[in-house]
Amino acid sequence: MTLARLGAVAPASRGKSPLSGIEPDIEAFRDAALRCPLPPAIELIGEKWSFLILRGAFNGLQHFEQFQAGLGIARNILSDRLSKLVAGEILDRAPDPDDGRKVLYRLTDKGEALLPVVVALRQWGEDWGHGCGDIELADARDGQRIERVRVTAHDGRPLSLKDLMWVDRRTGASMRRHEMEGVEL
Amino acid sequence: MTLARLGAVAPASRGKSPLSGIEPDIEAFRDAALRCPLPPAIELIGEKWSFLILRGAFNGLQHFEQFQAGLGIARNILSDRLSKLVAGEILDRAPDPDDGRKVLYRLTDKGEALLPVVVALRQWGEDWGHGCGDIELADARDGQRIERVRVTAHDGRPLSLKDLMWVDRRTGASMRRHEMEGVEL
DNA sequence: CCTTTTCAGTTGCAATCCGCCACTGGGTAC
DNA sequence: GTACCCAGTGGCGGATTGCAACTGAAAAGG
Image 1 (cartoon, protein in one colour):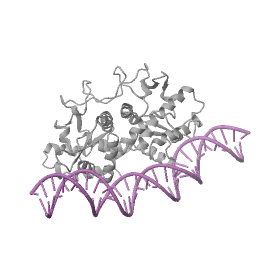
Image 2 (cartoon, rainbow over the protein chains, first blue to last red):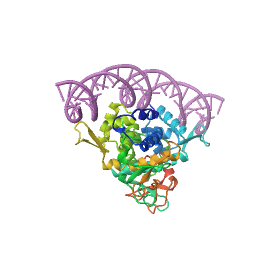
Image 3 (cartoon, rainbow over the protein chains, first blue to last red):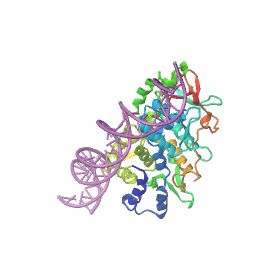
Image 4 (cartoon, helix red, strand yellow):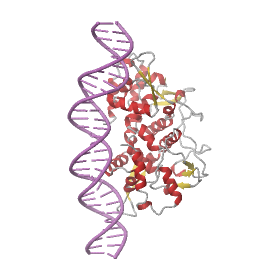
């Protein structure tokens, strides 16, 4: 299935239940919510194998056979996921200039831009007892461990969930989390 | 299927093809790689609906019917995913004290710790043209837009993929990305 | 050359998973 | 005490996955 459905479903729930009797501002938020950037992103990399392929690419895997052997993924699935990642412009597909049989799959700029997501998830996994924690990412310049990936305010202050609100850039309207029930961004 | 297979597959590929003739240090990295924190994390939140449920929870959804109507997910799938998220200690399940029919699903600390992942992915989606960009996250204190989620060095310098390396905390051994081919972390 | 091997897929088939809809069973409202 | 709401469960058909065997083109070896 595709997440385009979300666009179809949400308006249906609009007039309903705990969400009616809602102020006009909230309607604007809801409209914007229908174009939330997350669902398309999840459509691309939210699938298990897509994300693992991505991780492989970040670790230097480039060829079909490398992904296949490294991840233990079925060849047809791998083929399908690579096509989707290429179509989504996360990977770039090109014949290997040194060997006409091989194909190079490399991260595009858009793909590399997912680095914070991958690193954040890795740190989370380490923090909460998944995996080993023996091997860590470090700054290539000085070999020091990298900083934690965090959500911060404009002045660098770390922010947690309760410190966040939504603002509409055009109208300036704002909204706190507890008012967001049923609105998806 | 389960990603436990990864643990089974990788050793099989150990003696094989472009990966043999490898130095002893690399073996240590490979061993550690088998306990990579990412696969278990992906097992929990890597599935499409799991991640969307998580986003819903971050936006304040709490009840079964809210998730169902808000996301347009099938009831049995929702039921299954909520159970898994609860089992993974990302959500907490408790009867609603105000209404015995309702059940409250709330983020645990472990669940809230995924905030950087969710925000990073959201920012990525905005950057690359998915979604609207009209509505943004802001600091509840001053209403200013939040900073970008980034990977940084210990001194706060932003790091990109090419600036990163791996270090083994016990041995101190290090390794660059291009040496990591076939090793998954 | 001609054979063998490597690489990147594709195809067919069985098993699993997903989505939809109807239903249950306990709790609340009237 | 009857109607309604909430959180699930069960069955079924269609889509997706995983596995294995196969193809076709390009290198490597002799």
